[in-house]
Image (cartoon, rainbow, N blue to C red; front, side, top):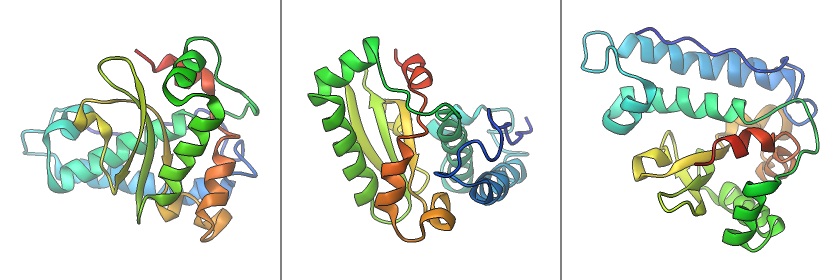
Length: 192
């Protein structure tokens, strides 16, 4: 199986000013593409030659895991955004957030803390467990919460390449601005 860099669901400048077209050029066009290219070079002749990204995330180790997870994580990150601004969770998803975090504002505060305090490179995630409850987890490097039996709903990439061109070393500013891009209809569609 040969993997391809998935097309973005919006124009390269659609997320400005939060994520500039220059960041898209480097983050999506170079970093994300490099993970795809490396993965395609690693899997031929291995037990993962015809495996899905999800299978590799769950079973592989080393370079295959790292690159498969980064392809999946980045695709999931980009697909959680839209050019529409100011969407908010509603219906079942908002009820779940209120149930598990007390309020949407509490959820955002806790998510921001997880994203800002993730040491080094990694991800902050909104996940759903097998019982249907929501939680926030932070993972380092290429780690993905699927390995822990959790269903990802939303992620924020906190590798420096995600924000450095636009925010330099101001990760908190990037995380605060991230919320302007989240398409809550997409996030709601990911719930079980």
